[in-house]
Length: 524
Image 1 (cartoon, rainbow, N blue to C red):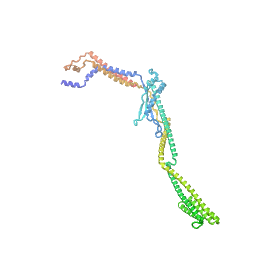
Image 2 (cartoon, helix red, strand yellow):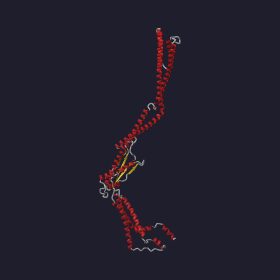
Image 3 (cartoon, rainbow, N blue to C red):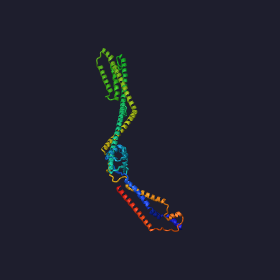
Image 4 (cartoon, one colour):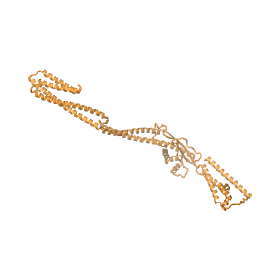
């Protein structure tokens, strides 16, 4: 039964033992707690102070809608900010600010300008981006600078802010002008290429004049006209050749009948020849009238010949004829007339043949043009395709160039995206480092850890027994009875004094820590 009670007691927390530990070791805990807190908290008042000044720079969108004027610069604000930051953190820019505001003059550890530049780069805080929660776009960013003097931190932050604003305007204007110059160069190259293509097309059209695809209809019409003329000339040539045979036959008949002094129908030879000539001319006129109008040249010519022959016949019948004159006329006039007509006919045949040869040459030329038109059309299509591509490229570049010029003008007038200082750089009242309230809390944590470690160390190395449980664990026997401690009045007085001292110490340390925490909160 006793063992069961002891097992139950062993499973329950031994509050009496812990309370006894607090009574015995509270000074070992409070003193390290206070010393640890005092060490950490006191260092926050010894370390060099640093004041941080910051300002918020707003990213304003272009005043002109992008539907009217599209920007021609890099729209990735984060990349542009990174580039601007690198330019601002360059040695030249930072030395300019250092010399202007006489920074780091009292710091003897920074002897060279490069040391000062590196120190200033460390004092410039990282750029803090502010994004829109809806589309995650950058709407603003914060610039920070830390210095031992709050007024100096404010001045440097203001200088950095102006550098960001001015540098952004310069970068956008430079990028815009560079884009415009590039497009203008591309446009000039496209113009040269387009001029070369135009020259090739003009040269090709000049070389193949008359054989171009656009002239196919006119070539067909001209060819049809030449073919009609050729047919007419061939018909006229055939008629002239028939006349030549006829004239030759008449001459032979005239020579054979002239010896008898009469014609075949019993009339005088001269009149008979003229009658035959009139019959032939009337037959030829009938044939021509069936194919052509009265205004056709060949019809007019035959009519004139008929009138002339009839006139000759009338003169021959009406004129008195003597024996000797009849013989001369019969012998010379009709024969010479037939020979003259035969000679005229020969000239007409030659002229017709030359005209036919010329027409056949022209017809062959136009047929060659028509035959070569497919290949010419393909070559011209290739040249035209290259010209159209060059023209489209030129028009596109011309449009982009005009848009880029407008965008560059907008950037020069500072109507594009720009940075605006939303609030002036703040004048810090509390130091950014050290954060004394944070150091105070860290000191309390360090003091607690040091106090617990001290108590644990004293308990670990203390081999004395302070209770019944420890005695039982050591002897492994049951305790039958306990002899209570006999305390004298002096012992009771000492216990009371230790208790009062412990409480006084605890209250004092707590009050000191509370006052220190309040001071740290109020003064940063």
